[in-house]
Image (cartoon, rainbow, N blue to C red):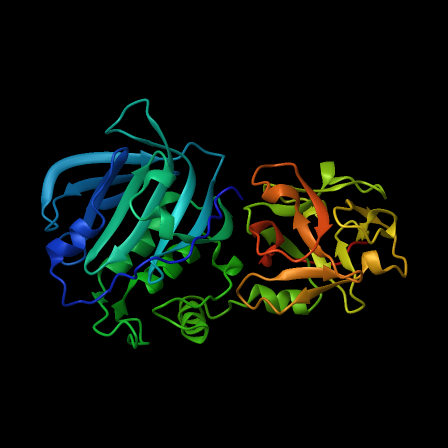
Length: 376
């Protein structure tokens, strides 16, 4: 997935319900290239509706939630779908980012690349964004790739309308657990569930909540949810995502021994799905394992897929267990799985390298969009 950008959280904002509604509105004041619509849960629950398979119609509201009489439609041309990410802004505020092709009747002929959604106090916000890197506060974004959604507009509309009926949590550190209150994380998990990608979420810690608290929220939204890490521990296949924003992939999805390993945008391909076996092999769904060419112990050696052998260049282990966080992967020679030059685009070369605090050496599991069964 293209959108996985990490940064050290800057000065945290305080999601304190003692702030005025006006301050809450201006905290996310739109910048150039951004359209914003505010929806107030206690003003008009009917100012959003699905107007087509992939279209949503809004009735405009001002910063106090009062209708302005303006109506506009946001649509995403099918059948492309949209890439979805969970965003944690400033270390405390959960948002949902959708990446695709979005159009609005406000700007005929203009195509926006992103929709950024969140809830703060009694307002839900939907921002059409042309260039997400220019969004105010982008430098503090920590994002988690959640996969691709093909959900219809009515599923999203239904869930956000239900959320509008809930009051903002009085205590964000201890929100009610009966579903009567909402706050940014609860709203975001509901949206991800409506988009069909909640299954890919791994709970993470923020400045506002712990991993176990986020786990409780997810389980409340979807009692059937199981952590992707638990699926991997059961031997199922998953994507191995680098902090540079791509996933570990066999070039061309080839099932030929000796094929090189690269990084690429996520696709539903067997050559992008891996599992770490009990013996320490990193096996792709084609049945071959991740190997250092010629079992080289040299820094910078390339990687390929190969038949299993008792070689140190085929044995891998986590340098620390990345439960919901990033970690490094070391081979038997003591070198780390790395993206050469921290390359952030499709086609990055994979090699082994000495320890370095670089994005290209940081990895995490992300649940696969398949049944995870072993290859025949």
